[in-house]
Amino acid sequence: MYTFSKEVFSERRQKLIDLIGPDSVAVFVSPGERKRSHDTSFPYRQSSDIVYLSGFEEPNTILVIAPGSDDGDFVMFVNDRDPLKETWDGRRFGPEGAKEVFGADSAFVIGDFEKKLAGYFYKREALYFTKDGSSRDDFILNKLTQLRFGRDGKSGPRILVDAREIVHEMRLTKSDSEIEVMKHSCKIASEAHELAMRHTKPGMMEFQIQSVIESHFVKNGAYGPAYTSIVGGGDNATILHYIENRDRLNDGDILLIDAGCEYKYYASDITRSFPISGKFSAVHRDVYQGILDVEINTIAAATVGTPYGELHDTARDGLIDVLRQLKIFKESREEILEKELYKKYYPHRSGHYLGMDVHDVGPYSERDGSWKTLQEGTVITIEPGLYFPAYDESLPAAFRGLGIRIEDDIWIRERGPENLTAACPKTVSELEAIIGTAG
Ligand code: GLY
Ligand code: MN
Ligand code: MN
Image 1 (cartoon, helix red, strand yellow):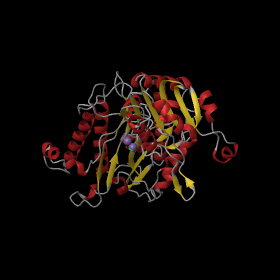
Image 2 (cartoon, rainbow, N blue to C red; image 1 turned 120 degrees about the horizontal axis):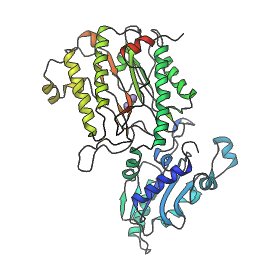
Image 3 (cartoon, protein in one colour; image 1 turned 90 degrees about the vertical axis):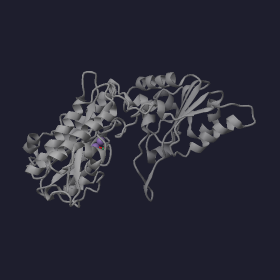
Image 4 (cartoon, helix red, strand yellow; image 1 turned 120 degrees about the vertical axis):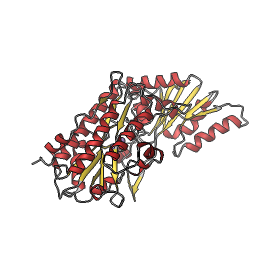
């Protein structure tokens, strides 16, 4: 098994069964393979929910959790073994491997799914399923209708629940073994950012720094980036999702790098911003230090029991103060808030959940619409930033074309927030001591 032991997945499935109850059934369908161009595909990435519940990585997979069914609680539908196909496309476990290695009570070839499905639906109260654009969506939902309204005396689930309601709530709280993997993902990413700082020199290309980072990811056993790396110098840093990474790095500009790796299916997500020359100008230093102070204060506010939305408010209010100190806004704090003037320079939120997906799953609010409070075992990012567009003539010239974000990955704990990316340099003096020092 690539990630955790068979027992870990079996415990997760048992928890799922306990949560949905014996009269329900849950179905999880893997995503299709995606064409990249002509006859090549994007590398296959199993859905995080299927990896979370089984550790199984192959395409054409369906998991059925059907408590007490004739085939057992956990049924897998998978690719058949086929020596010729395996020679081309890689190894497959087949139904036997699904049982032996992945702990399925029964396993069948994927082609049997359609004829077997009704058997798992009979007499169930609820189906937990996520309609997610897979080619099986229609078949599964039509089968529900057919059983409920058909004339053959059968019955099927009357209640359809989005499976994410349960599984994503489970994924929100990380176990100790998940945290160990996340710590490693964060360690690799922290080192990669430090290496990038050391290699940065004026005149280099953004993609050269990207290659320093991503080669460190792969060299250390990560799959690669958890999302497309952002390496933007100068005003490219003011484009939040800048991913072209093909401009030259200029002396006197700031370089913003937002990059994290996926290690054993767990993402890290770090942003650092630093001067390409190795020395902050006075203006850049003032902006940077202001944002860093806000980031540190927001991390300190990430305590168990804090309503999630308060973190954004803390970051937003701190950034408004920075904008006023820099004299970018002359209006009062109240007016800036009321008219949402700050959104011009701080358009995103303070962060997000982090886990198997970079923008990890799990609810941010309760059913009554109040914010969910932070709980022990959740991992979040905190990532305040300010972005001053080059074209904004209302700004003093020294600020135009400047983008700075600082982002760390925070493990929420009873004893206080723990920064999993603390090893990644971020103070002005740390940065100035290492930028451009690689031989
Ligand atoms: N890299 C995506 C984010 O920071 O949210
Ligand atoms: Mn992030
Ligand atoms: Mn990021």
